[in-house]
Image (cartoon, rainbow, N blue to C red; front, side, top):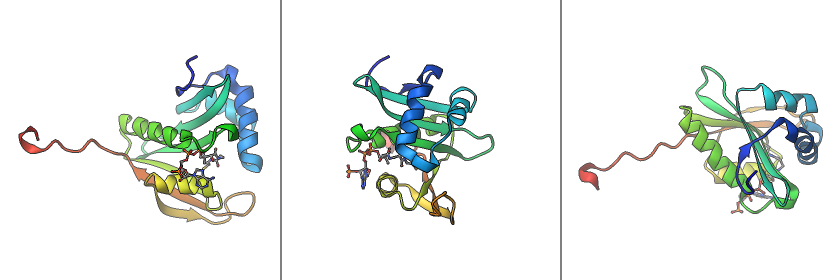
Length: 160
Ligand SMILES: CC(C)(COP(=O)(O)OP(=O)(O)OC[C@H]1O[C@@H](n2cnc3c(N)ncnc32)[C@H](O)[C@@H]1OP(=O)(O)O)[C@@H](O)C(=O)NCCC(=O)NCCS
């Protein structure tokens, strides 16, 4: 597998993904069973990146029929590789895939207390369009965020 590329996760990656999931999400972590389902049956993309022979980051995108938004269901960067732009790189890839698959938005939910993630999403042009009070196990509020998927700008007249 090539290093530094986002590639589809394989079933054989499950153990390592589960370990990273627990490291990144504590009480909110998906179970191994949920991750297995997401890896094998969910409609969308489960992508990961390897650096120095371990998973440096992964991301799960879900496609729902009749929805205008592709959902960023999970995004996680190994603590060892944070602050190097991987979160930003994965968001750009998510937006690219949402556009290619014909979605109008990329949507997500995030705890309002998750400062790194909320800052990343705001920096990348996401807007808050709703909230769910006491949504997480620690009682925190979920912010519903979305970003309109970029279309290429219309070409200027006269080929300019
Ligand atoms: C949120 C997360 C994915 C960010 O990944 P990352 O690769 O470290 O982020 P990047 O290096 O791409 O940072 C991009 C921007 O995000 C914001 N950001 C990242 N970490 C931050 C922090 N600790 N505090 C404040 N802002 C932060 C900044 O705006 C940063 O831009 P800058 O470098 O110009 O300041 C990572 O912290 C993570 O995996 N957290 C645990 C899992 C999680 O909470 N996922 C989100 C669930 S909704």
